[in-house]
Amino acid sequence: MSQVRTSDNSIEPMISLSGVGKWYGAFQALDSINMSVAKGEKIVLCGPSGSGKSTLIRCINHLEAYQKGDIHVGGIRLGHGSKVIDAVRREVGMVFQQFNLFPHLTVLQNCMLAPMRTLGLNKPQAEGRARTLLERVKISEQAEKYPAQLSGGQQQRVAIARALCMRPKAMLFDEPTSALDPEMVKEVLDTMIALAEEGMTMICVTHEMGFARQVADRIVFMASGVIVEEAPPAEFFSNPKHERTRKFLGEVLGRH
Amino acid sequence: MNYTLDFTPVIDGLPNLLWACLGTFTLAISGMLLAIVIGIGGVILRQSRVKLLRWLVIGFVELIRNTPFLVQIFFIYFALPLAGIRLDPTPTAIIALGINGGAYAIEIIRGGVQSISKGQTEAGLALGLHKAQVFRLIILKPALRTIYPSLTSQFILLTLTTSIASAISAYELTSVSQRIESDSFRSFEVYFTVTVFYLVISWVMMRIFAFFSARYFSYPLR
Image 1 (spheres, rainbow over the protein chains, first blue to last red):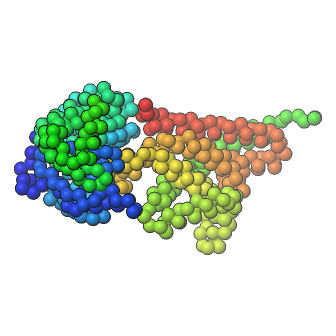
Image 2: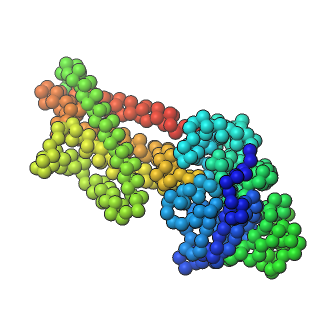
Image 3: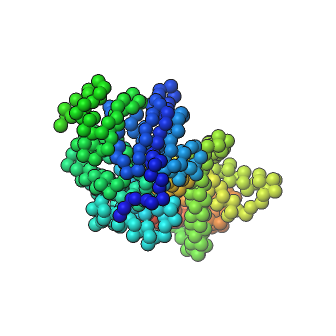
């Protein structure tokens, strides 16, 4: 299944942030963030904890409000009206650290809920789409189970399928493997790699540098709410420009 | 002690007593349904962005939980007619039970809603559902499951509270038994029987709650 859409204007970036600032009270979480993500581009966002990387992607689908600057998603300016926000959320899928599957719904129902309620699909359409995508994340045999009956890795793959059921133009991943046991990280990363290879536009907050090296078009390094440095992986790993980046890479890569 | 048991008045009054059990049951079930509606509605209003609505709910809960049920039911039955609202004993009892149980239900259900992780709401919003859909489709059921034991014990209490409706002569078990007792003076026999009947009614209620639990809240949690 291809995510390529002919109607998109390919000159305009899929996601763009300009001068985005966010405060929690007096604390500034994001400071003048400028970022542009082209269609099909894969961005890995990394940085020490508290650097604002999760906050940044949560602003893109307005789970967090921002006070300054502009965010455009698929040509829509993400203002504060709920109609616009809902429209953007339907275009942008999100995968969370804690999976956040709905415990009272089966895997299949988890995947069918939003397409039926927000896209107006009928039950057979939603089910067909859900089964196709569960197949794609290689978990179709678990469709009738409840989330609690699955392993963490399986739950996260379902969460990816659930987001894909909305046929999003871009996907946001907020530390998708951080809550997983080590032996389950690979299955989730493999799913994400497959998605990347199909051309999905992706922004991933992750500490998985192997994944970043393999998949990312650009790696964006953040610290203290600002973008410190961004570069293609080869350059980022071999020739980091800033001291903070070098320190971070030393810590992250030293762990492996 | 030189008391000879004589259940004849109870046996003669048995059809009446059984019908009265049904009356009690009806009051309890109707009161509960109203209480659930008030409980869920109250929780929604309690989260409203409009401050006035939030305060109205808080005021309502405080008012009801800090005044006696008997006074509440008297207020509806004897005081409201002066304002032109005249209700029969049974509707009065149902409304009083629903309002009283509803006030407690608001607090219980609110606790359940707060226990659901924020991630659930965020996942729903991120999928493009709006707030009301998130509450109805994602939050409500797990929240109700969490507080189901507290809610059921509150509703057993509501079932037993129906006996207070005898004070306005609503058709229920206590008022019917009072009539039989005052005609026959067989206090022991009458109230012994009534006690057993209330036990049975409570037991039936618990079976009903268990049925709903098995039907709706049996999805695995781990």
